[in-house]
Image: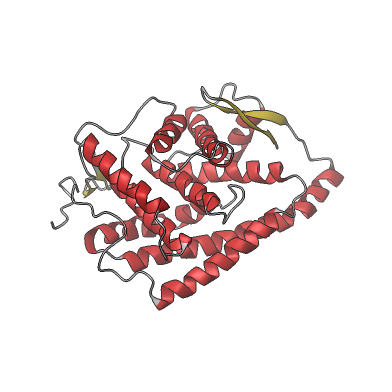
Length: 310
């Protein structure tokens, strides 16, 4: 059935894409570069004496940037102040960013410590934490993605049973043994989750958390340090445009290129940040400017996860 942006896209094809050659020569070359940069980032992370400082700092940066994509904006000062003082008297935007951080760390914890799988129950838990709500899968009609100019851009599938069916296919694809490189596979997974749009709100942020968790599950990262949301934020129009082109004309190659470029660029940038940490730490100590605060990360209604230090 031909796609009509004004009608629910109940005919959204399952993964993997059929009759489309994704592993083209340009894609494979980009995949090699992205894997190399990601591997170097993984090694660089091991060089930091106190990895907690690194991963919590980058985790807050990721939370801030991912929330900004959804026009949830706060300042670094407000964010770190709220984090350090136990979230007393914080503004709503800052609170939403910290909820994102909680969801990211909850996902990391249950994936690595409890050996949970990337399945619909976990997706629901993540969106409930980041939105501080009890919402589940969409069960009412009428959800549409609207452009700022008022034009309907996309109408996702409708019907709770159908959405669950689409998510079940996505779960099967995540764990299906295929010849696809995991980075290419991640690009497909991210598109499909956003196209299913299973929740009334929080789909973009949940999808970006799943990107990080998938890379960790695939052993391509040890900690959530890939700062991919900043890349998306800097190329937001291109991000949405390429997602739309996959839906309208199965332009998978362009979409996968975007994600691979983001992984490579972000890995290189984050590696530089990591390698600069020792010298920055030394300068701060010499100037007397370094202040550290110990604080427990909390999972809303789920107890505590690892101790963090900023």
